[in-house]
Length: 238
Image 1 (cartoon, rainbow, N blue to C red):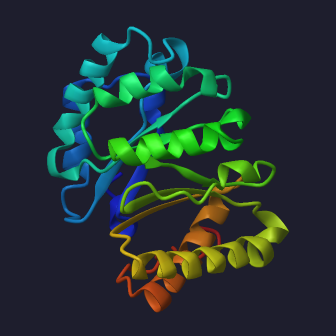
Image 2: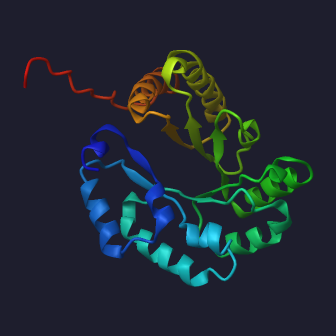
């Protein structure tokens, strides 16, 4: 983590999906990233809340989770709640009741196809805007409905899933260029913060597309992100 934080300024902390960490573990993670002032963690809600209890009677687990991640202190970024594929628009009221009881600065990711059909889509995004909750935008092959492009708060949380391999230099970079243009437009319209997370089938490819994304962000969006520092390939016997 300490090496990761030298290259990047945030992490999509998926490991919390599998369990609520002890407070001392969170404090240790924070300490490992302390040398980078702008680094923040974006922790995922645990599956005991989102997938097993499906937001019902999950107050105890939610309190434990919130107390745990509070130990990130100044390094706590937006949290994200990813709901299961079977969590449908029929549970809109349950989602509302759960969100009302949460602190601000978090995002929700819905995956049931019904959320992206009317009238459910309008009801969902109007509710999120009313409660000042962000909507995760996922850009992935095969599920273009989750690329909804709805911005409900002045921040965006984008999960970019690339195709990798031969597509890395073709479709993935073209998609990044498209995002840079869209984000430039949103920034002109008042967008304040961008959280842009990259995923690839082969994690080695993630570093390559990250380096390209950083270059484009710096050039077009005026960011000041350091380029990825690759270790030179070693030659010889040792």
